[in-house]
Amino acid sequence: MTQSSDLAELRRPTDRLWLRRVRAYPAASIVIVYGIVLVVAVAWSLSAPGEFSFAAPGNLSMLAQQIPITAIVAIGVGLLMISGEFDISTAGSFTLVAFVVATTFGELGWPLPFALAAGLVAALAVGATNGFTTSWLGIPSFIATIGMMFFLRGVIRFISINPQTNMPDSMAFNPSPLFESVMTGQLFGPIYAQLIWLTGIGIAAYLVLNRHQLGNHMFTVGGNRDAATGVGVNVRRTKLIAFMICASTAGFAGVLQATRIHEIEPSFATISGLELKAIAAVVVGGVNLFGGRGTVLGMILGAALIETADNILVLVSAPEIIFKGLLGALIIVAVAFNGLVARRIGASGS
Image (cartoon, rainbow, N blue to C red; front, side, top):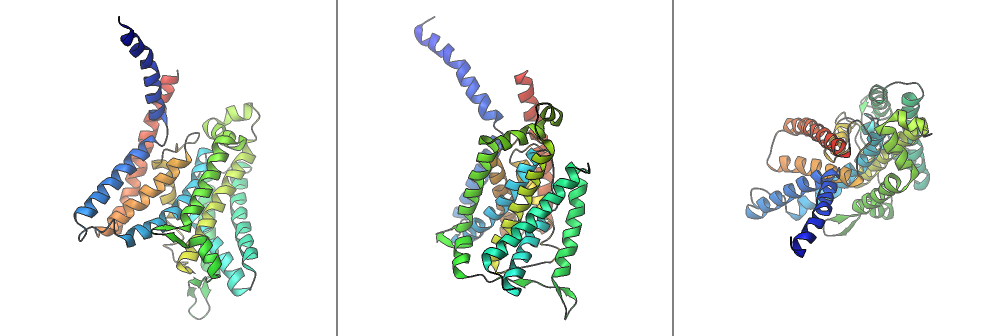
């Protein structure tokens, strides 16, 4: 055997290890899939701009404003799912916090910082209630947060009642130009302030998840609750914090949306559906549906894929029901794929 062949043999285990690490990375598949979707959509748009305007500046601008909002919600949902729990009430938190901020600021005349603080308190209260109901009362999070979802729908529709029509009505939200610029202002081209907020929240979530003890506890609690208890992890506190983070990110995203469109809409369409979109985003992004596995990058790209797919379907004039069917299909495929990856990792580890 020659010296070059000897070196090749020495490199092979390292090469295989690198390849295994890439395959095992929870966000690897979503990076590839979303990259392919973008390339195909842009190529199609450039080849037939009159028929498919995906790459048009106006459409890219709209996507650049909507993707960060969904991704911020998905980050909170993803951290909670890594901890082994669900939150079906995120759409309620999304709308309720915006209503609290708009009501205290617009109708009660509170200074905007105090109005934002009131919105944060409302979000933390929702998250703490979900966490207490799940962790201390022992009610499964799926059931507990469904109850919270219906409760928040009732509260939102009650506080938005127009006395003249006795029907829920939208509420205007017109903060100062400075606040609007900081929250949703255009920086350059299709880049808006929402992307900066998403970047900051994404970095903070990454540091918590991968560089802080709380993140280790989330992975441990979601992966094996009994083992977490055995090594001294406070399971209840970890899940309580995860629920509060989830409600807070949803509420903050709701304020961003209200600032962008200058109103809060209490219709049934705005206080339901977001939870399914967020869960689909994080599952497609590689978060294990049963906890213990996931990445912040995957959550963000999963949200981007969901919003991009929705945008493409709108551009080709597909019926709305097709998008809902696509969400369901994506969840089923992603769960099956993530399960397959987890079994392969377990087999290779053993």
